[in-house]
Length: 184
Image 1 (spheres, helix red, strand yellow):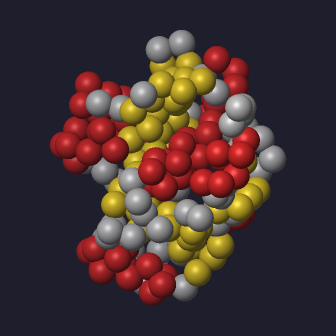
Image 2 (image 1 turned 135 degrees about the vertical axis):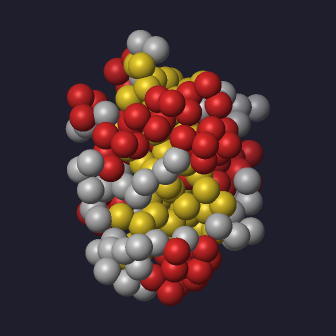
């Protein structure tokens, strides 16, 4: 699936052939202290859960929609190439993950981050870590930084739509509103 975004950037689903480029992007951001490590094997297996932003055949951003339970999915490994930061690439990726999560039937989308302000502008709220027990008991307890990582738990209910142009949450359109908006 390809989607157009601003500035000649396309969003698409990654595949296994993108795994090395995903790994390189995550490693570059890992050095900045913003991400947790991922293995090449893990990225190859889960590549189809990633949305990538591409400009002129170069991946400039990525993130994974990682299911944690039947109700909760996580924005995982959100990374944008340093040359593309400030161009709303990350916002476009998160917006697409949000649409996919809603389409796949998840009730909420979460993120664990050192930069909560970035997600607050997209309608996420800071919550206690234990409100996302699926994440804590799946990943956090295995992490060497458990209880000292400094990340904020963020969540957004998926009954709230996000408008990437305006940068805040809007009520999700109801079926009646969508039907009424269609031309006769």
